[in-house]
Length: 396
Ligand SMILES: Cc1cc2nc3c(=O)[nH]c(=O)nc-3n(C[C@H](O)[C@H](O)[C@H](O)COP(=O)(O)O)c2cc1C
View 1 (tube, protein in one colour):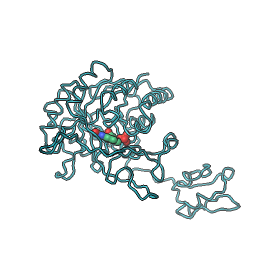
View 2 (cartoon, helix red, strand yellow):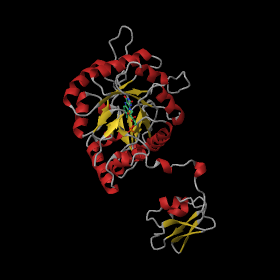
View 3 (cartoon, rainbow, N blue to C red):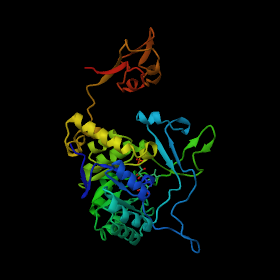
């Protein structure tokens, strides 16, 4: 059995890539990821430093501290036990620091002599500054990057907030290594934007990044904003269903390899992305919540899954679920299903009564009973019940 994968010409020992963010911010982080067994890493985006006239060069990004919070429960706290149980969580961040191109070029040059893992350089410049995009790509490929990922979160606002394929074609005009387009606008239609960036020359697509999304979280009791009193950014498992839908829709729309990103928290999520067509899968927020050791847990988990299913390679299940994916109009409406209650299991808590929106469930002799005529067959009671007493059965 092998987890090996070739992603737009870049050979990797497994499909797990550390996404561009703080866990990939410097050479030391890349060494740790190599040691942790990552397939690859996309370095924290490289940008040209900005400065105001007369001032020393500023790093792009401000420095309010603290700047990270991991949250997954009411009151904005974090419970690792919930995360371990596959509960959703979110990473908030402010003031991310961007390394300079020179720092990164030097680091990559050194690392290429030391580590096994291929390195993907993420670059980011301003809208329409195509020459800056080209210059950054040249610096990073000359330093030895195995591929370039375009951090397209700087969407040209003036162009109706749409991804600009011009960035891809500009970088392709100078690139000697594969160019990956990271799509960042989840309001776009993957079936439209995917083919556009491929036509512009993208060798692969990463989807869907959430970096540029302005978000807020509030501690209700303290009546305070979380971390800083300003809009921040986030990552984490909350966005996985969006990411999965993007990869499924891109799989149908384009013929280039895809990298699934958003909400990957354990090996199951890696498998989910592959089942809808991803060649590689990127993890970011979960590394803040669980540390670099997560990579080894993920590769072990995927191996266990492949063994149970008798798969020899990732190709054996890549895109396997796409054939089952239907439009809403194609979904079979009949035969209908209705809920019934296993009386032996029912503990009489009444939770299903309270959450049945069709008033179909009532209590009789401390047990739930379903009025079959009123039941809509919606299935919510099967999720709400703490002891799995309701079940859905076909009628007719
Ligand atoms: C603190 C932080 C910094 C990030 N910096 C970058 C970046 O420099 N370039 C980029 O393309 N994406 C960046 N991202 C976005 C991540 O690469 C990833 O697309 C996003 O967090 C979704 O993945 P997740 O759900 O696994 O967190 C950043 C995310 C976080 C949380």
